[in-house]
Length: 276
Image (tube, rainbow, N blue to C red; front, side, top):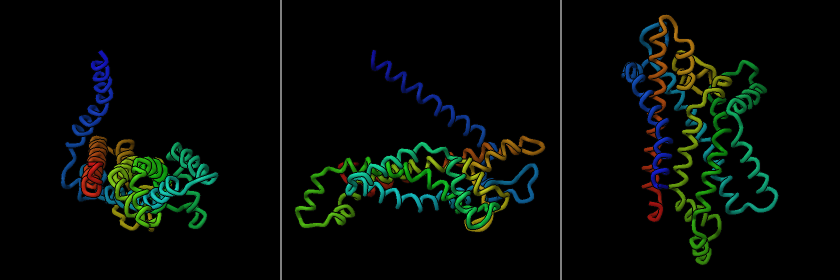
């Protein structure tokens, strides 16, 4: 009886995911072609156009957010697990817990307020979006890496100390490589957590119809924003804009799938034999 109930619960949990995959694939394939991936929306009012500018913007903004978040998150987790004691460690843990529940639009407002101090209230650029996404990424990275480091057996640390190896070298040469597979998975989950965020990017990066590869100069589009505007303001006739919205959603879905595949490859390459 319990086996049947657990199986039914798993099937019910899987149904929304399958429905989402099927719906996005069916609606997105109609416009998902080479032209869509290699052109932007410069001068396009109806049929045609593509999401090249949004794809490049998403990769640049998310990549910069990852560069900002991963070192900070890993070092914070290392401190909490290997060094952290007393009030400071408890305060950091509390702060990470609070940051985990921050609404995404608050992160966008924070980034906007920060850069508006230096560049004025009209500031809109990609690096601001990267900072906003990093606020959302850091607590996820900290929590996932912290749990992975706690799973490393203490016997490995003690064996390294017994050989006269210092603590910091033990962390770099023993602890982190042992937890590399879990760390890669946690970082991938953090990227997947923020790559589809729309609210913070609407506030700080804005939107544009042309390709912009400089995150420090001018507005920069992204796939979530492109999908949002293509669906809510599709133009006349609306069919072409809706098709572009579904194709952009499918593109974002494929990017997330590719990130998960990369994480699995990294886990197999850098993971310890026991983790494999």
